[in-house]
Amino acid sequence: MAHRGSGMNLDARVQSLHDQGVHTVLAQFVDIHGVAKGKWVPLGRLRDWVEVGAGFAGPSIWGTGLPRHGPRSEYHGRVQPESLQALPFMPGFAHAVCDGYAGGEPLSTCSRQLLKTQRARLDERGWTLSVGIEPEFFLLSRSPQGGWQPADSLDRLEKPSYDLKSLNRQAAFLGAFRQALAALGFDWEQIDHEDACGQFEVNYRHDEALAAADRYVLFKMVAHTLAEREGLVFSCMPKPYPDMPGSGLHFHISLADADGRAVFSDPADPARLSADGQAFVAGLLDHGDALSALCAPTVNSYRRLALARSRSGTTWAPVWKAHGENNRTCLVRTLPGRIEWRLPDPSCNVYAAMAATLAAGLDGMDRGLNAGPGCVDDLYERAAAGGQPMPPRLPRDLAAALDALEGDRALRAQLGPDFCEQFLAIKWREWDAYAGSVSDWELERYAAAF
Image 1 (cartoon, rainbow, N blue to C red):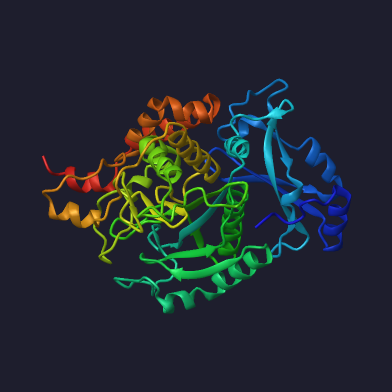
Image 2 (image 1 turned 135 degrees about the vertical axis):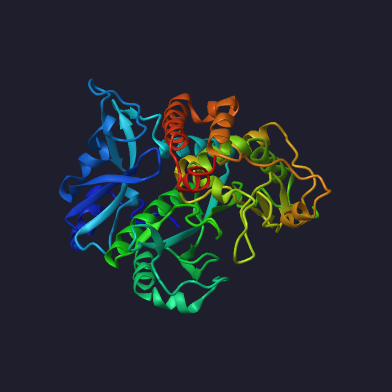
């Protein structure tokens, strides 16, 4: 699905938007956490926003690494004109994606620029990367005691997957969300209640990698806005409840060559996975620990990536670095012509996670790695039974993942030292803040124990 407006000159684009009643452009970029930021700018000066960019104080944005003074202190978000489209839920406004620039040059700490750099490596090979993103999320509200709870107080089934009653009770938000997505060109496919109370999933059609990442950021922005209008909180926290499954953000990845042939596909292979597909998967597994830092970048992410009990009896979280044909208990699930990368969660910066995933997969291809035989077992059942060797585990916490990223020179070289330095510094501060906190669990267990 290409962005609307591709190929139109700026004057025609301004006129088209003006005819739709648009007077203001919401110029949007993301910070290093992947959180949407931006400002409102007048449509009539669109050429300025495209050629120079909307200006922001660089140090006021997480992770730019820009100084407080001098010619590179200003962050310029350059509007990508092909991304412009009117926002159906904000009359008079159009949305535009921005690339980060400083001093007239692409900003090396801009995660969208990172993904464009990795995509250029594919262009050299004549390949196109398509990604289907599966967003899972929670709808929450504050409890009278100040904690967090599912927004629907009646949503409390032990096994709530596909619960139509709760789905229908959220029809006001989900219906408005569906209408907004359809108007924005999302080819939405299904909406369902997931396996935790208050948890939902919305699926829409795959897209070229950069467009898919842009779409997901817009998806979240629309969801946050419409949820707030209903008095709800749209939450991308990976695992709010210890006894329920968490939210993933699975990437369905496929590569096509210049003739449109599926690079990952080999009908003669038992798993229908080509040698290139095997090597790509092997790259993901080889760099899996470091990728965890970027795909599962919060303390809470590792509540999801754990052998936790679920009151529904089911958890789909990847714990072990393994691949298997249509095997959801593995980190990589292989399917005809594509792979499902199950590590990312919705707290990630989707551009950085996608760039790192692509870099790791291409490294596996360049090195001619082989992923080995696919796993045919339910790994959770194997672990419960005991007595059999298990594949290596992913990092158990954010600190271990950050250590792995620091030690993965090849992946850091592909992503660039500037971005990695900023990311690691910010995330280590986050870990230190967590490590220095005292939880309610600790107080209950230890305060009067000794």
